[in-house]
Image (cartoon, rainbow, N blue to C red; front, side, top):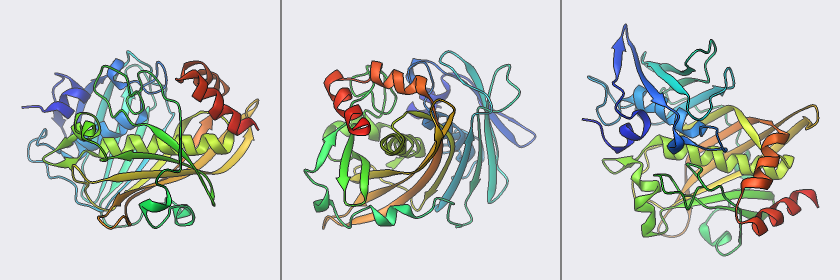
Length: 319
C-alpha cells in the first residue's frame, strides 16, 4: 500500500520492474511547482531516490541504501514543464546505481543520476568550512528575511498544497553573504517539512530540495540573477530523524559569463544538526552549478512576495 510520499510523487501510477529496471510515471502537476510553471528539481531528484532505495517498501525485495550516500545529478538534457508526464526509472546495481527522468516524447533525460553508497565523499568542494560557524549563537537573531513564491514546493509558505514551506534568510557573515533556512524549530514543521518522512526518518527529497534552493539563493547573491540547476552533488553522512533541529547554509562561489550572453554560477551548501549545547554537527554537504537566465530574474522581481521585501533583496545585489 502506498504512503503519503509515494502518493505525492506518483499518485496512483503503478511501479513496474522489468529486467532489473524499476520505473513509474510521475505527473508534473501543481503540487510539484518550483519556478512558476516549472517543476522543482528537488522533487525529481527525490523521486529517483524513492524508487532506487525502495524506502517504505514500495518496491518488492528492495533494501534501503545505507549511509553515507553520495548523489550526483545532471539536469538540462530536456526541459520539463508543469503538466508534463514523465517516466522515472532507476537501476539498482550494488554500490553504484543510476536513475533518470524522461519527459514523454523527449530523447534526452530531464534529470540523470548516479548514486554511490561506498563511503566515498562527494565532489562537493569543502567551501563551507570557511563560512559555517561553530554554533547556533553565532547566527541567532542576525538574519534578514528573503521573499518567497506563492506556490513553490519549497518556499511557498502560504500555498494550500502539501509542501515544505521553508522561509529563507540572508546572513551577512564575515565570509560574505550566506543564505540560510531552518527546520525543526517549531511545531508547525510537523505538517510541512517533517510530513515528508517515513518511520521517523526525513525523506531525502526534503533535504535535496531545501539544499538546492538554499544554494540557489546563495548563487543569486553572487550573480544577481536566478538560474536553473545544471549539476548538483550531495553527500549525506547519516539519516536525519524527525524533530532534529536543522540549519541549511549556502554561499555563491563563482560566476562566469554575462547575462546578455551566457552566464553560469556555482554555489556550495550544507545541512547541520543543532545539538543540545548549540554546536553544529554537519550531516549533509552539497555543491552545484546553475545556468543564469534573465527571464528567471524578471520572474523573481515580478512573482516573489511580499513586494517590498523583493525590492529590498534586489537592492542588495544591485548596490
